[in-house]
Length: 156
Image 1: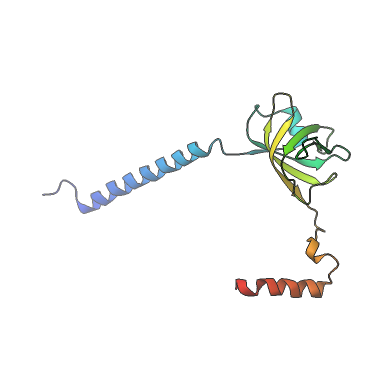
Image 2: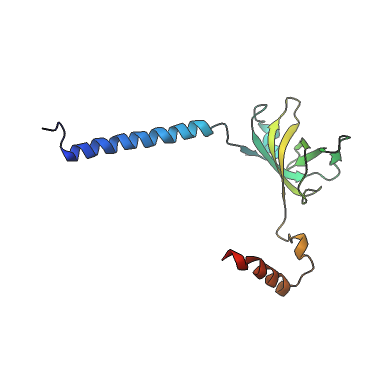
């Protein structure tokens, strides 16, 4: 004779499954806790800076006149500003996106160094609502629609 009826066996099995699912969720959350990047605006970073070395994102505008290429040719220094008066110096080594320029929006992923300079590992340039890809500049709406239609034929 079995110790548990089939109905009770299913309930016990369901309980174990729920505990296992909860444990897996907690384990995943614990593993990803250091992978989250918090987003800061320059004013927020000045007022309440993140811990040195903590992975964060900094978003704002590239201040006009602040972009300088260092002698190595691949490292740039620039300043990110926000709506307030806060200015955050940023250093990035690598190839910048085509849309990256002074006066444009930028999101920099990286960390704050002890000297207050934001060391960016990735630069994401933002464009405005009037952005048109280089290949489509000067095209009429009809021409652009035909080009788009040609490129999506094989995707359906």
